[in-house]
Length: 407
Ligand code: ASP
Image (cartoon, rainbow, N blue to C red):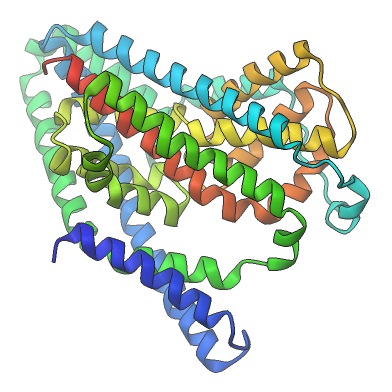
């Protein structure tokens, strides 16, 4: 059986087993041991992905940029990548805002309903100015510190610089270039091995998620959850595949077959950064994208291209506005769009990162940052689908860039 099918079965089994075990007493020995083993296997899978992540991101971006120059296609790849990122994110924001308007999420509920959640919660206040300052500070730092702390954004930036230096003066460092080539191939070899554990890892993560989800708040916020999930799925199942078909002539079915392992891993781990190795593996092995393209687009996209997060933040801001009974003017909604774009770019690809940058989005239009307290308990659930769509956006961009450049 192919790895791809085993991953599908693992994901289904995880959800079904989780649903069955929800009926057991959580304190029983059976539930406890299943949760323990699932926690262990899940952490092992994520741990292995994280182990290979930093060396992989560093070598792939460096090589990606260095190789682009050699093919005289550098500008084209850059341009298409950034245009795709900007267009898909903008579309996602518009979708999120429209859905929240159409379905009037939050109407009929009031902040008082959530008093318990809000009590004792103090949102870290971060204005857009401070956020931008923090972002810039986090971008340029000692590369060794960045590598050892796993600060991906700073690693990406340093790798871009090294890549550019190699591209401009490559003939002076042939051995270094060779070293990067070999290190990258070695990382991908490790990824291939780690992928063997993906079916089990994904099963364990999903099982744990289903068992531990708190259902009380889910029912109160059911409409909001349904609207956000439905719209995110619409973006992932209709909008992105349509863009892919129009600009790269890849059929949705072929894409789904090749992208499945990455989408499931993103869904189960809620981290586009941790999914990078799997995303690259799928693009290169199954979707036949040039490693030079995926090695450049994917690590960058996992940091700055987040369609699902942007859509969620736009919809959530309008939800909070409705809760507090505030009607946002057109101007305020425009500010909201710009801040959401910035927030989705600045959110690192880790679980619930969108929640952190959400504070800034709320503040940009004068909404209470404390409302985060209502969104936090349901975030683990919403983070699954939006992370999968975040990763899908990177894969679609890679395929489009690959189609329109010959490298
Ligand atoms: N978990 C998301 C990701 O890794 C980020 C977010 O919280 O929206 O892509």
